[in-house]
Length: 199
Image (cartoon, rainbow, N blue to C red; front, side):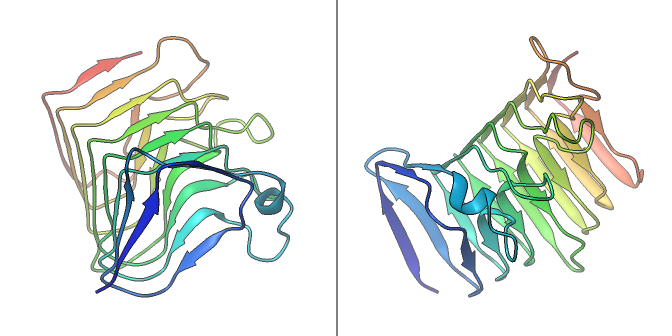
């Protein structure tokens, strides 16, 4: 039930943060703070997953920039989701190997809205890292976002959720070597409406 506020600044090369409590609100104030990963996370051979690892449930992350996450297995995420019912709003994800990477989580609804994702991917493992990659959950709501220019044959949006609601986004590739703009490899029920999609 706690609120964690992060002052507007650029935070460079801090360690990975694991949020294992539930019902948290984590937000930037006074502007959008930039959390810029560096060698500490990149060289973490034990726990290296990304900038934020969220293992608690019902966590809301708001108004934070996540940048340059790189880890040993090439899946460095701005946010690594391990707990159910994550809500991410008004955040920016820049140059990570994965913007948001979600695990296989039962009884989970993930909501991503008013966010920007750009230039995720890994030249060390082309085609397997994406701006957003949601694995087996119940429901993904992805609305009012911009996801563009994944690199190294990545996707702008990949989801294995049973239900996908992809609404009113700009999902585009204009200047990089990506692969699919939207990839829903497990099918399921999907509503894709009101988007601008460019390849």
